[in-house]
Length: 383
Image 1: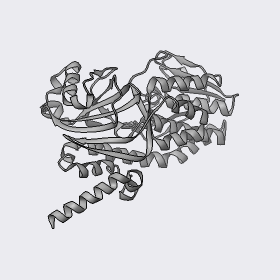
Image 2: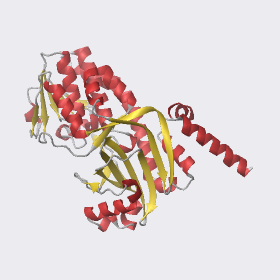
Image 3: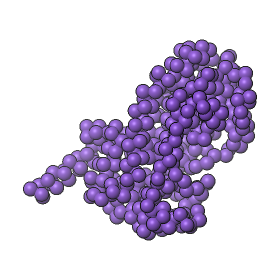
Image 4: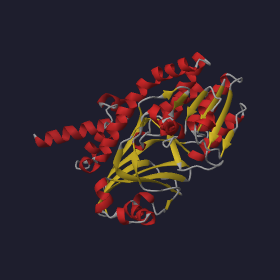
């Protein structure tokens, strides 16, 4: 069996590693358009549940990644000049994206796989002769574009604008800061991914893009604006850039998960919005599900792909609905901010519909108790 994995990101590398380790006779080629040791972005997150699933699939990969990660179980929610600290029952983890890729490439190399860097797939002919084609090539997937009429992608362009930056300091604890300043409504989401580096995602709502004048600014001017708005959070540090272009999120999904022998996973399948966590964990979960179908059906590609969709789609559908609720909440964030901070934090934590009061009580017990007490006090005051 010959498999082409298009995309040398976490999802593609992990699937290739699992498949080759399971059956060394499978021929696997990995195609990555970027040079070795080149990556966009800064750090990515892997929550506790995601790490548990990763460990069950490949304990060695999990342990090597965990050794490189920064962990924490406290998150700040900031509304203008007020802050609530939320202590979670479990710990979240973050890792430098480049280090994540290097670990996964090393793990692939140990089972005899080599990543073909600077190899851009242009058309279907470049993938001729393979029995299975795995499109793990991200939000702008070439595999998806080659068979666009068959996959039938659909996009929804959101109104908010955002850019990814880094900070040359570990900003602790991880936090989300929502602030009205400089004539606009801004969000800063930051988390440490090494002992001395952080990711900082800056966002503004659609009104702010024009009313605060960002539409007429250069990227350098926008960066300076964000540094002023979040001066306290940045603790005197400047933002670092790496392809830090302001853009609108395009929520792409596909109607068909596979065509003939080509299948999509990760962001190529459904682009994960950054407000609901890392697309990395979703893509790696897709990789595990595709591998389990490969293990069950071997070289019977039609059965393999049908099984993958049947096993993975229900979970992905739930997550997609939660994603939509999350980004819709962010699109209306200016109105959401018109409450006191305890209500705001509660609304934020329950925005996707996947977390209700009972679940919140289990994974953020101290905040839940504080919130319940604040509601009782407000009720008593209004009596």
